[in-house]
Length: 367
Image (tube, rainbow, N blue to C red; front, side, top):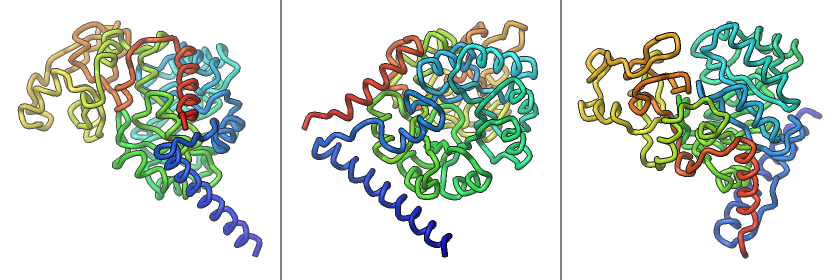
């Protein structure tokens, strides 16, 4: 009987919250009635992770760095490190450096298209939060995180994936939409998927991910019921980012319609859709009829090299870090629809403060 009553209360509370969020969005857009920031759900997320702002940096590949994660976390938001393709030594050093540089929380991300063999190294080095994408962690992974006193989140795209993550005990969910940059797990837009994920999550925090590039976008996500917003492309263009200067310049010059959801840059990760800028490589491939691997124009071209001389081939799905030298503009330039709002390269602290000021301004729409 108690369980039935609890389920009834929680289900109806979630329904009231979602209905309220929908009504608030309607009011904000049509009648100018402001919605106070942060929302109750955002306040709950902020309290859970001791954040000043309900803003998360997305784990945007090689552009993540300890310097950026530290700066974001010290500014009161959630910094991030992408660890999937890192060596054990780099994982240990990156997490240790970030842990030493901030008293704030930060997350480390593992893409489950491959085994996260360095997970225990990251936990031993002090990673407080682990996020998983493109799959569900095993119960052994979850146990290891809990044994280290950590929390974990999972990137989801539907009610079904949300339910699977919650069954594993996820502390939060990151709901991704097809508006996102980089490798896109989603198969529908953020605001089509978000209501279904929120209904499953109930009181568990849900982040909105995909196409958010300014404070107005954060406001829209919070009013729609999300607990926070996760931004990737916008954080690539910051002083502390490891994104190559040519990559950052391309982002500043681009608009949302300069991006494309494609499988063009699938080298190293076949058949994984991703959103990137339409550059010379994409245009040539598209003009050739989007041929499969083995039949692509300029397929063997070496566009850039790393410090150790390692080549970056034309269709390789590798985000472009500062360490590369070569024709960066022709490499994969991952970007989401939020690129529309990337017009400068500020410090991460300045950006975080700006985003929240914009969010508050959006909540104070003139009546």
